[in-house]
Length: 591
Image (cartoon, rainbow, N blue to C red):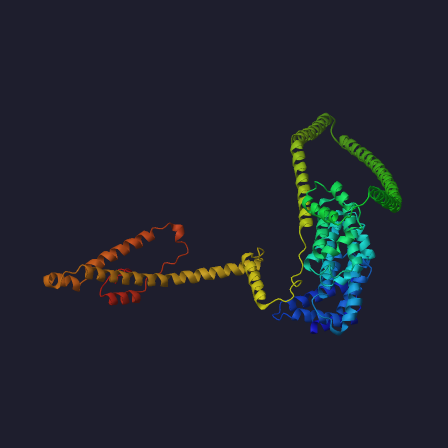
């Protein structure tokens, strides 16, 4: 395809950094897959994926994922999208002659890159949804290529993910294996005993270390799913985990998973042979030693790991405290200097004011000096009193409004905290939406038509509420034109309705005359004349139509706004007059 070749050309010729390559790959691969998924040919999407592999675009994606994640400059969302696109392109097509290189080189490198990115996202609390997306990509690969399970379980990056103490990370790891087993019923049967044993070690380790109910329930469900698919093959492997039933009974009893736990305990105890009390005691002592050794090693590693963080934290706090003290000292010095300068300038201004006042007093006559000083004192008293009254009123107002302000401020703080909590919980509970091309293998034409109809129905029901001002003005003009055309068509409809009413009245009159006609043996000349002139009944019908028109004209004035009142067409009325032979239809008085 041209788009794939152009993408390969851009990747090989242009000198792009890592972030630009990620953006280019995301946009180009997404467009190519969308175009292929929307085609009617069900084999278009596999052909596009095969073209991406043979052209080397997938190799570029793997190289980008294998780079140091810190070079992405915290653009984790783009990296997670690229990981999802890469895993989707590795599924659903036949590599052909390059099958050996595809299964032995490309797929292991893709899995290693995905797990490396997941281990980086695991350390960031704000990237939980992105971590879930990457783990879903790994699950998608495992569901189709089950031979990658051994590499995933023995990967160093996956071991780092397993050592994480976050409950969400542990739950996502267990759910990944559950979804892989559910999506492909032959997934576990294609694994070797060593791979199954590694998977059991992870699940039992989660039961022993974690105390979360969700993690425990998922772990028990995974073991039961493995027992259902492997059946007799799993029972010898469960014998390697001595004391698993006691662990379940002691730590997980009464936690809401009793039904599944009882099934697992029954499965474990069904294949356990009779052992002597001394052997049981020795096994318990050995198990206790293993647990204590694991716990002590874990504590030691945690203590050693936390030493560097503690020293760094102390140094940062000391430097921050010293910097804060230095800033406070400088601020205090500046404040004292400012106060000193203000006092000096105030004294200078007061001295200049008094000198100017003394000069002015020397210019006044002796008999006006006393009155001038009294006027100055009065003005000063007025200014002081105004300032004092203003300060007193402000204090009264603030004291009266302080309680209300405190209550409003507390209410806003609580509402803001509750909204943030609800938003975070909704974001954590919302499942990730996978692209629509995933899982569309073997899409038929009928299914495609059904999906298209569903999309059109959704778009028709959920209209966008955002309309630009230009669009609003265009819609307003269109509505005005439609209203004007509707008003213009109203006259024609009224004329048609008037004609229909006249025809109905004429027809009913003739029917009534025929129904009430006497026999021919008793017909007189007067009766025969009445059949020749239907003016009596027509007059009655016309009067009823006229009364109905008057009642319709008595509508409120706001009902008649915008309705044009045009005079009737005389030609139309003359036509009706000629058709009915003088029958009054209604209209102007000139007919």
